[in-house]
Each structure stands twice: as structure tokens, then as C-alpha cells.
Length: 226
Image 1 (cartoon, rainbow, N blue to C red):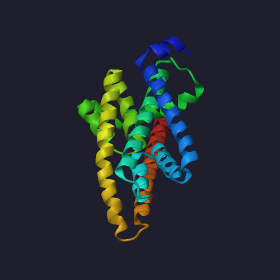
Image 2: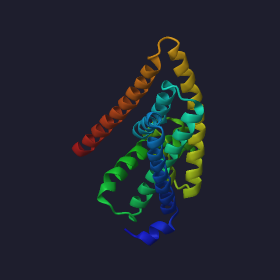
Image 3: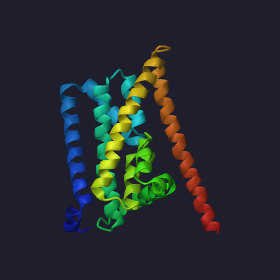
Image 4: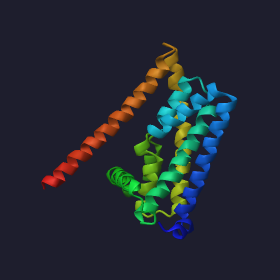
């Protein structure tokens, strides 16, 4: 690991900013647990769903729980920002062999595979394609993979970060309006209906992930036979 080269790079500074921001978020959750433990569980659950599945699931949980836009939107923007500030630099630094950690090798391989298999539109349309790609509210098709695609097509680090984050914030704002309306509409039929909407989003994301893994395994086995 080349510490000086890491901190001298734009990606190294992004990673430091992401780690500091993540630490502040953890401290905030800790303070919240002390002051209002019941409410902080909802924020923690929304954060966890965003991390595991994407902002679509996180925001759906928030609206199903009765949260407002001011509670749902900023937290999901923050979590997506952390996603990009941590995972994008980790990929780039590992790709350049500035970080040589065994634990990162499988991560880099997965992210590169996702970027390579889903980045056709971005390569064809450039920045416009990247903006559209980031708009999809699931983890493996959102800002993290989008930022890696931006790196692979040669965008400068800070321009890549700005495009991805601004597109993400815009997408979250639009999805928030749609998901809030869907949650309110579902609640007119039954109070548990908004939770069914959340379950549907989780299942769709899981099905898409499993389908992608199956296609990847079939492609890999086909290459081995050849």
C-alpha cells in the first residue's frame, strides 16, 4: 500500500472525505440512539435498506413508516454520497494497485464485471448515458457502478463525481415524489399496502440481482467450455 500516493490522488481525498462522513453518520446514530431510540431505528432501517438494495427500497420504507420528504430525502442523499465517496475510490485505488488488499480483489472484480456488462449505454452516449444510468434506483445500477463506468471511459475524477452525485440527487428527488404518491395511494386501500409496495421493490431488486448472477455464471461457463 503506497500511502503517500494514495493521499496525493483525487480518489484518495475522496475516500478520506467518505470515511470522515461515515464516521460522523455513525456518531449521529449513536447520539440519536441515546436521545430518541424509537425514532432512530426507523432511520437505521432506512439506511440499511439503501445500503443493501438501493434508495428505492430505503425511500419506500421511509414513506411506509409515515416519514416526510424532509426526513427521507436528505438521509438517502447522504447514504448515496457515502456509497460513492467510499466504493468508487476503493475501486480506482485497487485498480491502480495503490491499495493491494486481498479483501478488495473480489469487490473490484464484481464492480468491473457490473460496469462492463451494464455500461454499453454510457459508452455510446457518454455523459448523457451516465446520467440516465445513475437514475435507476438500485445499488448495482446506480451511482457506484455509474462512477466506475465514468472512470473506465476516462472522465476526470472530480467531473465524474460531480456528474454522478448531481444526477443521483436529482433522481432521488424525482423518485421521492413518485414513491410518496404510490405509498399514499396504496394506503387508501389498506394500511399495510405501503409495506407490500416495499416488499415488491425488494423482490424486484433481488430477482434482477439473481438474474444477473445467473447470466454471468452461464457466460463464464461458456467461456470455459470454449
